Length: 211
Image (tube, rainbow, N blue to C red):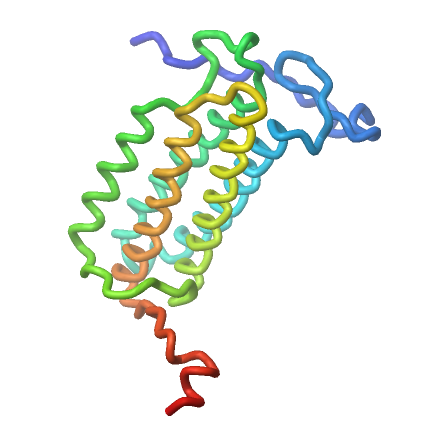
C-alpha cells in the first residue's frame, strides 16, 4: 500500500464547549490566540459555511438518486469536494511557519480534477445565450447558494492574502470550484429535465411597463 499523501486527523473531541472563546478569540492550529473576526478566521469560517451548504445540497441529490441513477455521480463529486474543503480549512487555519509537509491542503491536482469534470459535463449542455437565474429546481437553487458562498470564500482568501501570507492554491481552488458549482447546477437541471430560468431584463417592472 502506498504512503498516504496527508496525515490523518489527530483529534479527540470529548467535550464541545471549552469556554476559551468567550472573549472573542479562537485558537489557530499552531496554538496562537487570535480575534474571531480576523481575516484568517473569516477565510476558513466561510469555507466551513460553504461545506455546510454543500452538505445540504448533497442530501438533496441523495433524495433524487432513486429517480435517476445518473445523479449519483454528482453526489460522489460533492462528497469528495467536502473532504477537500476540510483540507483547505486545515491549511487556512495554520500559519505558514507552522504547516508541516503532510498537512492536509488543496493542491493543483484538485483544481485540475474540477476542470476535467466540468469539461465532461459541459459536453451534455447547450450553450448559454443569457445568464441563469437560480431556482429552476430546489437542487439548482442550492447549488447556486453554494456558488455564491464559494465566491465569498474566495474573496475572503484574497483579503487574507493582502494582510498576511495565504496559500495561492486556495484562491485557485475556490475560483475553479465556484465555476464547477455553476456547471453542476446546469447539469443537474439537464439530468432532471428541469427548465433553466434565463435572465430577461425586460421581465422587470420597468421593462413590462414600457410595452
